[in-house]
Amino acid sequence: MASITNTSASATTDRVQSNRRMVRLWLYAVLVVLFAIVMVGGATRMTGSGLSITEWKPIHGVIPPLNPAEWQEEFEKYQQIPQYEKLNKGMSLDEFKGIFWWEWAHRILARGVGFLVAIPLAFFWLTGRLERPLKWRMVGLLALGGLQGFIGWWMVASGLVERVSVSQYRLATHLTLACIIITATVYIARGLATHTEAPADRGVQRFAGIMVLLILVQIYLGGLVAGLHAGLSYNTWPLMDGAIVPGDLLIIDPAWRNFFENPKTVQFVHRMVAYAVLAAAFWHAFATSRAMPGSTHARRAWLLAVLVLGQAAIGVGTLLMQAHMHWALLHQAFAMVVLIFATAHWRGTKGAYPLPGEAALRA
Image (cartoon, rainbow, N blue to C red; front, side, top):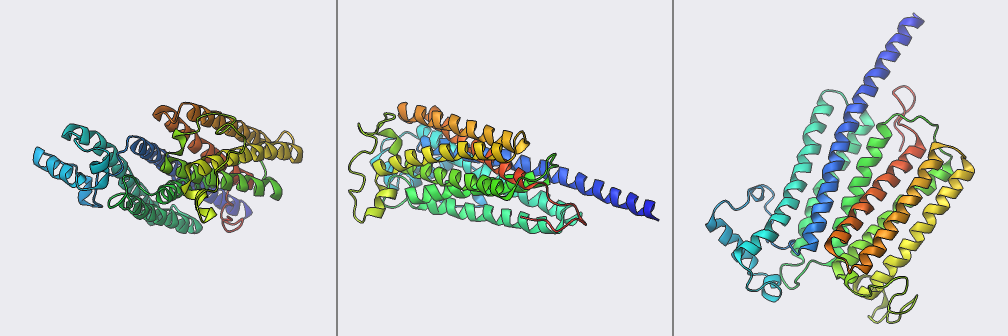
């Protein structure tokens, strides 16, 4: 009887592990597309293409203009907004097509990832391949994607009436929510993987989570820098405007607005938080090595510190190159790499999700 019970438990475990492997591979595919969306979004921003499509058509907008008349109609809509009147007046139809395709690609990828989540989710759910707690986490992930679509249009709408570009507040929110979705995807997928080492102690787990939070804050600040074009000025390092702490950081009243609307202040804060993230990463590496010497968790903490250092170096290069498009996109791409690794490391410190019979899935 005991042998039959053990065989049955082993078969259940094998089935669960197989299902988890399929779900994990699906989530990694979603992650690749999310990464592509962020990068195309960055290129859309850098090429000034984000306002080229002036309407939100979730269904009909999948189909681009197919003939000269439709292209002319789309172009005439763009000619009605301030960006055309103040920045691009006289632009040819062919030039308009160049910026249109960037924004269209960004939107079609965003729509596509919704289907990439929803359809396999329905399949895994209906065929019983999802453990109960995972179902609601995946529904939450899908809901975040829907919210991101709304935030994207909310951002675009801010540049269609009075401004020639989108609000930096909304741009930073859109970028940060994208990164939160990436974080959630990695977190869930990493928990489904097998872990070769026991969970780290609570202190290591907490600081690994703090690292993810710090990186998200820095990405939000990077969104403000991009929204204000703050990287196009004060292109020296380590000094800024000839000083470690430059003047005129609080010239806007009330003072809090400087941290969101003053390009000089926003760039300065982005620099300072970068130093803080770098220091925190190396502190985490030292502390983890001391608490768990020779462990996988310690090695990953050190790799995270090296990645953060590399990102800081790319950030300096981007600044010195006056935010050249290639450098800026590299900076953005590597930020995603750092975030993904930090999230995987954080989840790794917690160990794998328990198998059925061990406990309910823990956070």
